[in-house]
Image 1: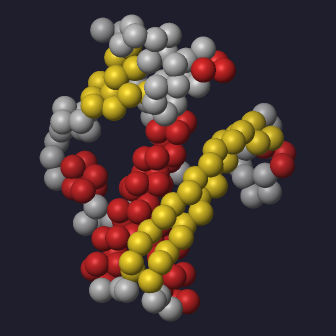
Image 2: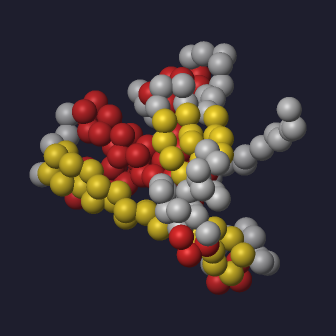
Length: 156
């Protein structure tokens, strides 16, 4: 969505979005995540050897999609002056067998399935609510997750 802050950051400057993730050495899987202005913690649950001191990688991924969805819907509602009072997004992730997915291109092995439930509070019409659902799929993180992604890795 053109007004989304993440979209501005990627399209108006030549600089890519940068973050740094570093082990803290304070726990087996404990990591500090920095974007230059903010510091977050990631970890794994105790049952897999972590300290459970922060969300795990998949939870962070879901949080990113949920935040982007909520922000995109808020921006759209403000632009269109819709009576949206609150957005709540609940997400879950699981691996499913490709053969169980009707309409998926992948036919063998497993694939990732994210379920996103969006709750919209406010006096929205049925048409406005349906349009908001369409707009949710336009959030930049959703578009990234559903597009072809190329990850370039190197040792430095």
